Amino acid sequence: MFRRSVAVALSLSLVPHVTGCYSTQRRGVEAGEAVAAEQQQIVALTTTAGTIVELDPGTASIRNDTLTATVDRERYVIALDDVDRIWVQHRRFNALATIGVTVGVLAVGFGAAVAIAVATKESCPFVYSWDGTEYVFDAEPYGGAVTRGLERDDYAELESLRPQDGLYRLLLTNEVNERQFTNFMELWVVEHPQGTRVVADEWGALYAVRRPVAPSAAVDARRRDLLPWLRTTDRRIWEPLPEPAGDGTMRDDIILTFPKPEGATTGRLVARVATGLWGSHMIREMLELRGRDIGAWYASLDSSQAAYDSLFAWIRREELFILALLVEESDGWRARGTLPGGGPFITETRLVPLDLSRVPGQELRIRIRPPRGFWALNSFAMDYGEDEAIRVDTMPVRSARDHHGIDVRSYLEAADERYHAMPETGDWSELTFDVPPPTPGMARTVFLHSRGYYRLNLAEEGPANHALLREIEQVPDAGARLAAERYRQARLARRGAH
Image 1: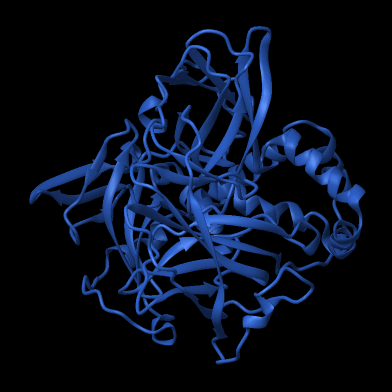
Image 2: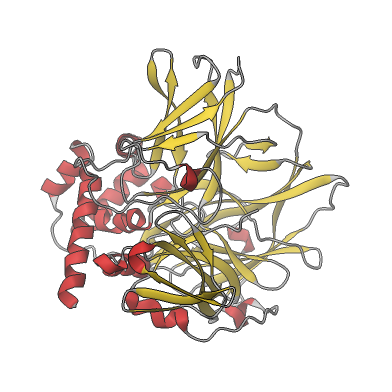
């Protein structure tokens, strides 16, 4: 299985941190010892043509808009104009993770824009899994829940989690400029038949998928072939820049075609996607438009169902953080499901059940219209198999201590009015869970079921920009156009600095 990608962007000002010394020695450390550890190096790149190039470790450097390295000990040189994304081996909390770094547009001035997005990291708590040797960045729960009224449950597969001494161990951290409030955490240890993979939908229902079928075609409105980018979970991620398309629109229009068994009336879309990095940054930008009125806006969401419903109607219309899935039926395109986004640094796999009873023939076409800059698309597949039996052991928190050594388990045992608060950047807690005995002949997958919300640290001063807020709320795609304008301003600032 391809190791999960973590979407981070790189500016030229960050290159010294990437190309510096790096220790490949792996050793187990306790959480307290691990907090300050961070090292990284470029290990691979994806070209604009979709070619993946694995680089010899420790050989890559960037200078004068050119990346130089060796591949199989042979010199390799490529212009950044021809690079879509680079991949960094990253140690954080002494963790070894693969981090996707968008650099292909540095030569045209995108560096400053992505540096802003990385610096502000509008995200959510980070969860690190103990893999038997060290902590590995593995989940970003309840992204987008920016106030208590938006608190939600999250279901994240922990791909790197491994048992040790009869325990699963997690590290929960606040690494961003926000206050985090976690209400509940437990593990779901899923036993499933060999040869299947278990995937969660948005609401926590689990499905065993045995033979997902890749798309046979994927094209956008300009008939560009996106199949190399979207058919496999790999280092190819489709994430257009946050700027208008050639026709001035702020959306891509992508049609995915899948083979379909004759007579199939249901199917399950398996998609690996994330919120785009710039889209995540725009959460802060949009909230700051409310100025000193932000507190009243939070209060309305926390107490009013009408305010909540109005916000979600806007989110569904604009598709900035929830993507509509349109299925082609005999009488045209019909909305048959939605695909949620997630944290910007990790692409998550989600399953969406689809009603195909009105789809004739042996071909299924699904249409998506993602706003540019708000979505990072990794892979799509369809599963038409029968449900298979799985067993789920629910494991409550066994122990939880914060970085002061205080026992915080009681705050995480139930979804109630008590929260485990991490109000400061740098706060962290270590959690353990019992490991149930395995079932012979069955495979095992572990999910983190969590619930909570967070509050960005905003200036909360000055008057609200009511005119722009009304435009965003009332004019279709005005939020995406604002994102493009902020991106344009960042590019100009970058050029002015040089």
